Image 1: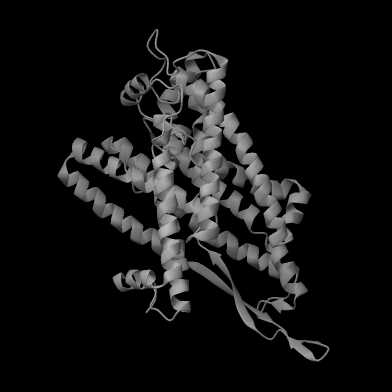
Image 2 (image 1 turned 30 degrees about the horizontal axis):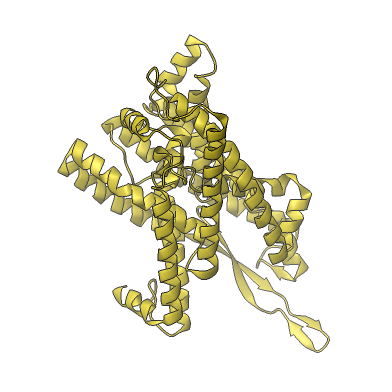
Length: 433
């Protein structure tokens, strides 16, 4: 592996891409420490030290690399873009025009990407507005109301709040531009690498918290369990069911087409990290409603059963079930067996032993359902591991849920891209001999 790293820097073109990617990531991390105008950071520091993040606030802080708790210009991180991308994928099922763009290939994907950018800016404005409202009240930071006479914003004027919203929205647009620069001129997927760098930057602080609160033995056990989980996640993420496909020979004029064999790769985790994000965001809604619904019974029920800060059996069980449900739901949106079967039939392809058309779609649906069942259980177990550790030991666990999936997935994809460029130039890669 070390030889592969050395070979990567021997190739001028690849070396330039790697250094460019590292430079852009450095710019992104510096932006996480640039303060937003109008924030009283003395009050903010006292508030963040007094309480813990919950629900989506914890997820936003994770994906922003800690910029959320500092209310920097990159406070929202890349979350508006992630939300916009998910919405555009869901709209392919609802709006026929978006589905047509998806089937047009590269030109249609450009249109989808453009609308994703527009939607990202709109969501950034909405989220930055909501961010100011909820953080000033203390709800998202888990501290309750702010002390009397104190405010996170130095001025009550509308102009300053508008400037803060504009600044954070511009920060999201700038991050989106940085990600696209990495995709075009660097190595790997830019947006994924930005999320990867944000998550990795938070790991040392979480490890230090375990070391200080639980001691060296608990810290060593955490690292060992984390390494075992990483090995397991790599094994599952690379696992796939390959369905063989044979294409019949076709004579068109004097040319012969087809006659080749290929396969359809069905991953065990077909839906990625999206189900965990959906489930965690949905489970925060009851806690958010306690600040709106004035009902002692409802508030006590949520505190006893659906409190993210004190996860109990009901919360963990609901989280497990929701993750499984969204794994099936998202897989059904992103992979349509009927469309795959129709495309195979159109170009003369068939699965050996299965008739083209409807029987092929039914077979693909049967195989996909079995694989997704195993994948959804794997995702759900991975999602609740940090909750179980928090409930039993009252310690944060950095190796689990969305964090581990993103770090491993992005790392594998980036290594594969570097490896492919090394192999093109007859160098030894990372993942094969």
